[in-house]
Image (cartoon, rainbow, N blue to C red; front, side, top):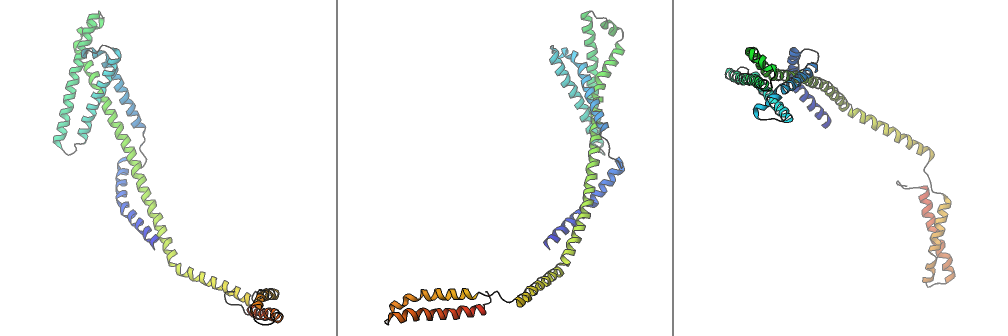
Length: 304
């Protein structure tokens, strides 16, 4: 009964959880399809984000002279940190905008934060262009004259590469994370639903089996009792036919003789003639013991 109650409790719990899991699974399947979403797009987006971050680092490294960083290694490290900071800024802005569903103030705040980032990076792009023009002019590089002759094109180009690389990196990283989350969520929800469905079938079968086992309990025990009774009757009849296992007559004589000899020393303590006592006492004791053991041989007790 305890085993049956435990199985019924498990079955009830599974039946309680299955409708919710089935509802979630139907919704996920309607959104993402019947086949598991691949991880390929998420991996591709992650590689694009890494490539954009490295490209932005290479672009920013020479301009770290503005921040008084002259060593090439430190310039590369600073540019990598600055590129990662800009990428994280746009990614957090995108997350803030996506998480503000149904809330206009939050979305306006996210748009304002993104606009501040765009304006700041645009100014940084202009500064990079002027810095590169100044450095090329000091070195006598023809690039300085070219940038001076086309200031509008140079400004647009440097604003674009300064703004586009962190924005594209953040977008790729965000899309890759969403694709990976969808793929993982599809598999997780599907696995939970399939597990609950399989557990419901298994627990129902176990409850049915345990119930049958319990219903047939009395019948099986009665059958076992009849079997034991038949075996007992069989051996009892065999014992009646073969007779009891009696003690041998030689064993009775041996025990009687030993008992008579053990009683012989009593003759020395009686005030009569020694010879008749040495003969009579062992004979009487031996005869009495023979009568007792021989009667027990023919009529054994229940235990014997």
